Amino acid sequence: MALLLAGALLTVQSQRWPLYIAPDAPERLAAQLASIKDPQEQMEAWNKQLQTFETPRKLYFNLGCGLAGLAAGLLFSTRALRDCLRAHGALRHFNFRLGWMLSFAMPVAVDLWLLPLRYLRGDYPPWNDSIADFFTFDMIVTLASWMLSSMIITLFLGRRELPSVLRFIRPDGAGEWVRLGLLLGWVGLLMGLVVVHLINGDAGHVAGTMLKVVLLLVLISAARRTPPPEPLSSEA
Image (tube, rainbow, N blue to C red; front, top):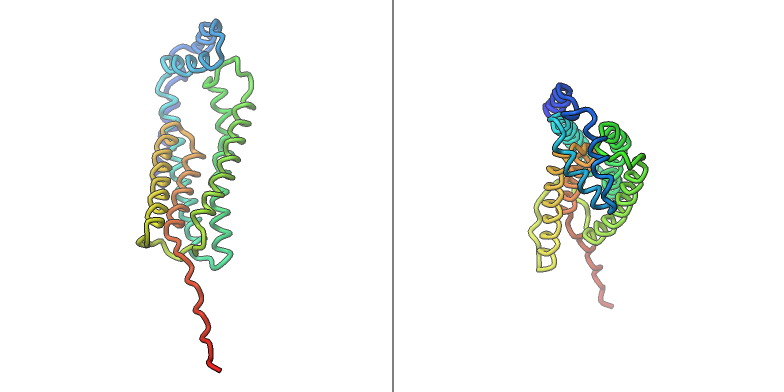
């Protein structure tokens, strides 16, 4: 609740400033960069030089959205963790997979609101007269990332049973230590991305990444299945 309130206050506070020090700054910058023929170089110059005309409004608004995303991420992560740990058998695995899929769906859902907003406030150059390309690219990357990461999750899960409580299991053997190191490295990378997304105001990515972190902690806690005891053979 405190994070959500702080995010709302920053968002409201951002309205004290105009978007740019001059209302026509994006149009003048676009005209200045029109002579650059290379699209990539032109876009890089736009992103770099536009910041020189911006007021603190975008920074405050982005931080407010980021904090709201962090609050939502903690809420969803707590619920997903509870649903995953309390379930039994196949339902636990289903909840885990469902949570993993939702962690990719949340950023897409929020971007349906965020991309048009950024387009209207002048984040994208006038020669990009549509956000369809940005959203299409976002969808392709999200779908590919979900499919690839789901296969990696399957490899890390292997013949393990998802836990009913979060716990640390001491690795037994070099392979288990490598698995633990890779998963912890993955968690560390995602935590770094949470900070980056929070600063950029990518609320959906903040929430989705937080959910991924919690689910990876569940995966780290997964233990190998104990094989059933062999039946005793009776002597003839």
